[in-house]
Image 1 (cartoon, rainbow, N blue to C red):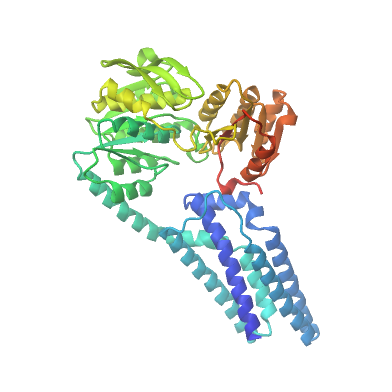
Image 2 (image 1 turned 90 degrees about the vertical axis):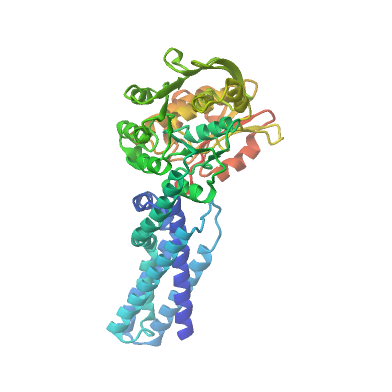
Length: 547
């Protein structure tokens, strides 16, 4: 009997750990924010409380009720034995089924923070286990005989075990805050002592990552440049780069500054202390947390407010919201754009955008003009290049150096990256994220492949707040005008896109709705033909999967 109890206890604890691992993965994807994790749990109950979990819990509770009623009525060994058998068999079965592997786009990374949270959560599980067993012992004075009773209670605890991760994250917050502040202050002190270093900060609703890599490529024609990798745009991510990678050999540090709420840009700008600041765009990204465009504008402008008196502010004058910010700025500023050449300092003319890159004439006031070529796709990338050229002009590069740097720019991974796998089917990878302007730019690029059948794979756009449904419907209409075949990922989420497609009478025979990107990839193998071009527009994290 002791062996049975030990086996059941081990199974229950392992079941909870598996559930904790999944919860920790979601929490990590959600940036360790409890409110977003709890919100995700509320909108994905089928993933938190699986069918197997429900069956296990219901059987355990029914088993417990019959055990209690049966033991009171009969006092025989039959009820007792059946109760033990059912408790053990159901828990072992669920553990074996829960151990089945599932693929993830972005696997759980056991960072030190994740490890700390895992330890705290497991301790909470063990504490609950001991408390429940102790209470049953105090009431019945026989935990062996009443094993089916506390096994049933523990099944309920397991059912809600995803909350242990939220509890662990709450408990760990003071610890994480102290650790983060230590690294933050260390990075800030290190940067403040590097007097010869020029720091450049880039923010915007979209375009900031591409602009960062564009700028670094141009400045490397004259300077030794360190830029934050990929989407390292949070205080901890930037602090890590400064503490570990930034040395005296670098002349320029380029940092992307991200935000999901008011005050975020001020925090990272205080860390990076930029002398030059760029605002690439203001749009409805993260509107769910910002609540309004005005709040987004105010937050992006925190970068400009952090610039020193001798700093330079650089604005995308084509963006209506950024234009408003630029017009109220009295610090030294440079305006760039494609559409408003009369009022900008850095602009492009004679633009020729094709399926393999772009050509244009770069114009910089007080410097002149020069012909430029880039391998980057899309007119919006010319706008990003103009931002880089504006900074380069401030940093003293010649027109020839700027043009040479522009010619060396490589496409950023998952951002309108043209891939030729050698199968006769071209792929445009724009899977990093999507927003209304970015989606429009991606479709424009796709339409440039005039001699190919055009296929799009997309789950739509997210985090657009109240505008999300309307923008996705418009996206569907735009897709209908450009694409020949459409694969929508996620029936519920892409419903607005579907409506937009049908409104423009898109051929439903060429419209497919699948549950996941894996399904879409398998379907593509059967429907693609020689000379097709496939656009992957956005790839949502695992937390948005509908299966």
